[in-house]
Image 1 (cartoon, rainbow, N blue to C red):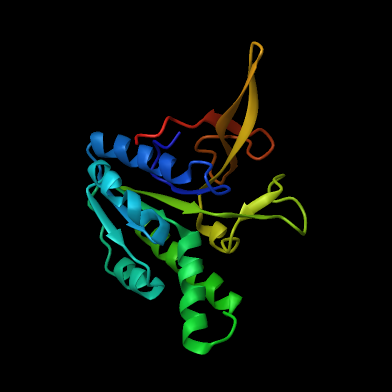
Image 2 (image 1 turned 180 degrees about the vertical axis):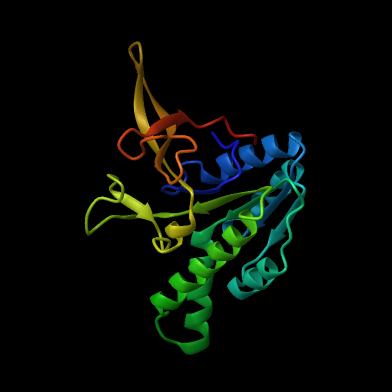
Length: 216
């Protein structure tokens, strides 16, 4: 599912397993000989960073959105490379918190959306040179103005960034009957595949897959 060098955006609600999936991808790519860089932007990831480190080549913490952008400006691909940002939602929250502290007012939504768009665009500039896979983890928000590729939720603060995303995957839970027992399954759904890498007819004929078991 994540074998191609592409710009993947993964989104879903809290606790659905976004970070767990990202670490699974990192571990598989590391074992396949790729250089895996993991960028943590959310403070709530701090308690598990030591558990993530064995599954990546290098791990960085960027809670300053401009610091992350400056790092990306100097980023070079070690062919083949995998870069994971966990998460774009963290960038949004950090920017809003910094803006509020600095001005005492509400953050400028347009500015934070543009910042995320610029960050993703920097990544696609590196991706087109070859040898790079990008995993963008994101939160989800309810879709208010109509269906987002037939979904009722969309990636938070990332609609403009979707122009640079190649494959978009939504994670969610659903009930699965096994005999007389009903279990909760964690599922991924390919809702956009811009170049038909995985799903030739997404979103009309999306691909579903079961999420792997957590590594820790």
